[in-house]
Length: 47
Length: 171
Image 1: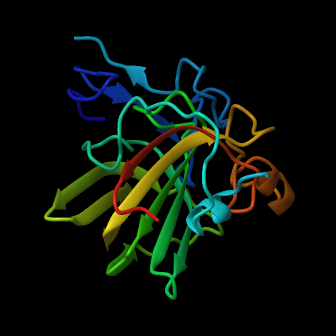
Image 2: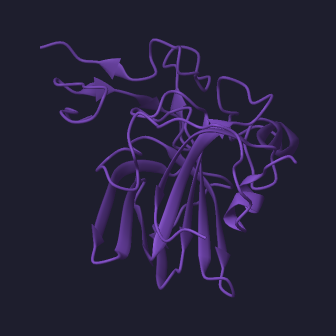
């Protein structure tokens, strides 16, 4: 996803989210829908 | 009295103390990024629209799992979406763009997959809070109707607002 440069939570280098075929964010290894505490929720990209 | 999103749309007062959300979707661009639109209620007679969001994926609103926007004095409401072939589908906010001028509230939401909603109104409120018993992860939309319903907020769920913002006139 594009960088997020405004707001309280910033992702200046962009982030990755994995989705299932129904548009839901999922864990890429398990395919399960995920909670905000899951590290794959909004996976920040490094520079 | 137990509050519900439907009751708040109808004008039920919030008597509990509430704080401010991390961002205000009524005034700040992209505050709803990655929130998922669950339900919309349009009350033509009372000129009200309610937008119920699942905030478990919302990037900028992390203090609550459920969000509700109530628009009053609604003058325009549009929804346009691409055709989807699945039984269910998530509509995730890609961009939220409030534009408020001269007493007119214009809210434009852009979703992925491709969909767009616009509302023009005279008053608005945003509530964020909790639906008791909602699990931390949303239900898999491929699950049964009962499993999906059990894991999502609805317009009739008990709703405990913990944060709110308003744009007058809201009545």
